[in-house]
Amino acid sequence: MSENPTNTAPGSGGGSGGRADEPLPFMQRLLDNHFLLLALGVAIPAVLYVVWGIVEVANIPLAQ
Image 1 (cartoon, rainbow, N blue to C red):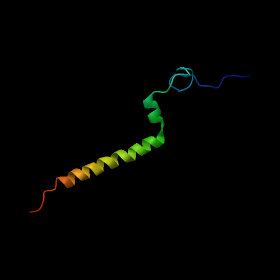
Image 2: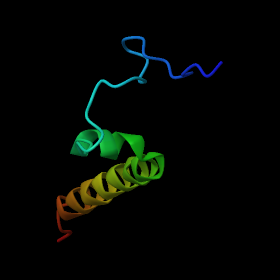
Image 3: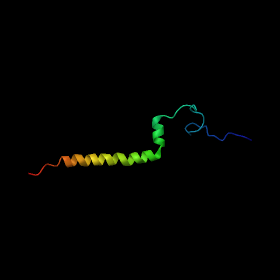
Image 4: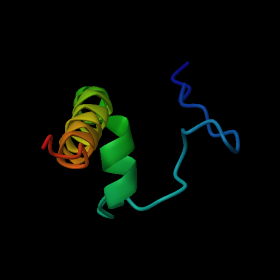
């Protein structure tokens, strides 16, 4: 018995929903890359806090 074990249920991610030669969309490739998401999750808040700190320091009035 040589049955095909692939799951072709809707929403299961298996089966022949798309063509094999069709490239993955950009957002799907981005969201599938866990290490890139981790790096962005660390880098974006770090950059925002640094910019926020620079703005706060620049808004301190000068002593006379």
